[in-house]
Length: 240
Image (cartoon, rainbow, N blue to C red):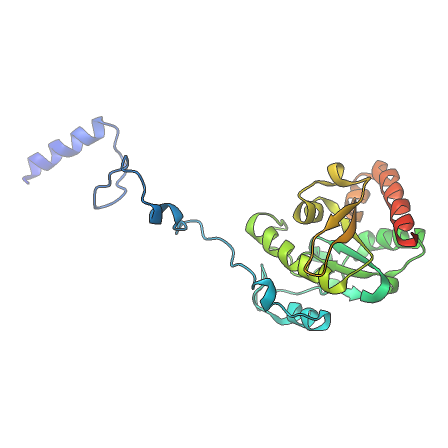
């Protein structure tokens, strides 16, 4: 093609509105996708690596806790990322599940630390408990870089949390905050609180209750009355 012909062709494409080259080979955009193409994952949007199948996860609580503390198969795992692992007494009958550690928690090595933790401790005292008489864990023992938990990572964490709950087998599970409630029940706190739920696990269903996270209560003190009602309901469920 001569320079003049090339310039003419470029001018025609410019008048047609084409201003970007997207590939060297033409593509028939109207051709229906084949089944193989429809099922193939997009190379531009990789999904999070799925957790091991349930049968491959450690079948005992202590082994599972050790796995959480060391495995690279967790969402947000990185060599330098701090992990805040479960704490308390798994035999207490009460398991409390948060979403993920805060930045302050990562520095302290403890879930629900600082001012949030002091409010949480007062909530426990209101039902005659303390951190030694509960089992406290999180959906993720690592904090996401964005501070958010959603999408495939949330689903992965929920799968592991269900296995965790099944191994701990508490009498009652308390879910703290919207992220935790959505991951485990598919409901926000506003939709889920005030009634009992069941969490399906490999060891059988576990009775669960939803309430606001302590951090939410610090931001909106007017909701403390709702949390108090939830705690009374929790205490009745533990004593029944």
